[in-house]
Length: 131
Image 1 (cartoon, helix red, strand yellow):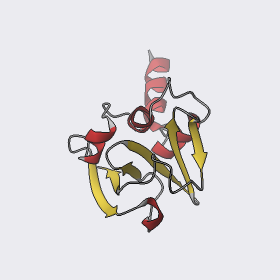
Image 2 (image 1 turned 135 degrees about the vertical axis):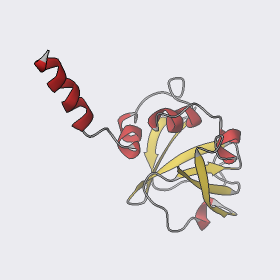
Image 3 (image 1 turned 180 degrees about the vertical axis):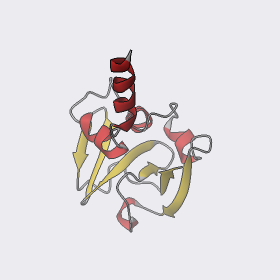
């Protein structure tokens, strides 16, 4: 019984993986495993919201911290920020100029640059943070 109590106590003391670590752990998975919105919500251990729902704050789980006309206008991002593009695509900022998302073409992957004409990134962007 004491051993079980010690194990339970250690489980509560052990640090849980943070959102950014959870995102990185899914790199290389296919789009069929994780759509863009599933990547973000499952990594945050939140109920699933589609991109359009995330644009509107995922039922109050996300707070809007900025909105810019285009991806190239993003400034002052913090690791873990959620980026919703036009209510149709979702990515996250990992820090150090790196982003992660999931697309049918690449699956879950990190990136630092993109084609500004790519429809995944060519719309208005909302920056949100988990509450």
